[in-house]
Amino acid sequence: MAKAQVRYGGEMRKRAAAVDRQRVAKYACPKCGKRKVKRECYAVWKCRSCGATFAGGAYSLTTAVGETGRRIIADVKKR
Image (cartoon, rainbow, N blue to C red; front, top):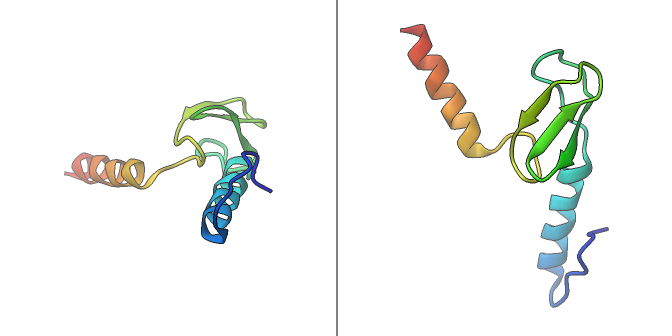
């Protein structure tokens, strides 16, 4: 399943396959809420419904660091 032919170990092939599944998956759009966001190119994501473009992670729409930053900003805005 992984595009790059990973060799030398089942664990590495499983990790590569998991990243590949994340890369081609559809995500929910933060603007319109529809599950139509797909990866355009490296770290660029586009909603096929409303046309919004997002910068995100290389292989998924959001990253752990991005989620942490979003929570901190939301908490600061509440104050």
